[in-house]
Image (cartoon, rainbow, N blue to C red):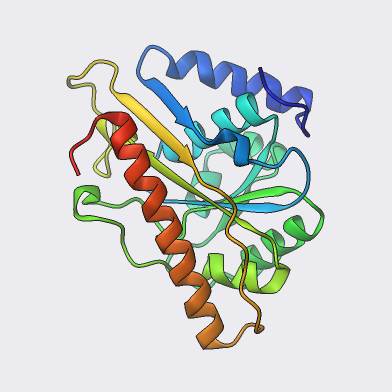
Length: 225
């Protein structure tokens, strides 16, 4: 049962519906959801192996921790009118991939300062070869942390790529692959402002924390290292 949080009727309805849609296609295993704060700002930062990652993370965070998450989502998803309505209504933030989108980062910074839970995939896109390890992180997550001082909640996900890899959705076996989600303890930001050295230090700490949770998720999913 979810802890009291900041869910409204819209979030309860859509995350409940998405949970029902996902159930026939994946088997969820989750650890560490107690690390998600019941109130207050934090930045969820995870590895990215599938286009399903954001949906799974939003559903699990809502249903198990009672929190809604404002993700930075690739702007192209807002091109579809129906998706744009859902994403806008749920407070998601469009970001232009491959560019330093200061407007999107500014919106995310404002959201964090208002006390919400935000989400970001610092790799900048779905990893085409997840078995080879994480891709280098982009600077967006470290810039948000340096600007706001919020803690980072590292998240590892594994198994979503069995159903929806980089190339697109697939319905090959296993019919219901295990999707594992591992939340880690909060990582506190470092002091020192927003200079290059500080941003690099923050990025390295975030990357290390995410890798630790990715290892947990892979073990939970029964995947080989």
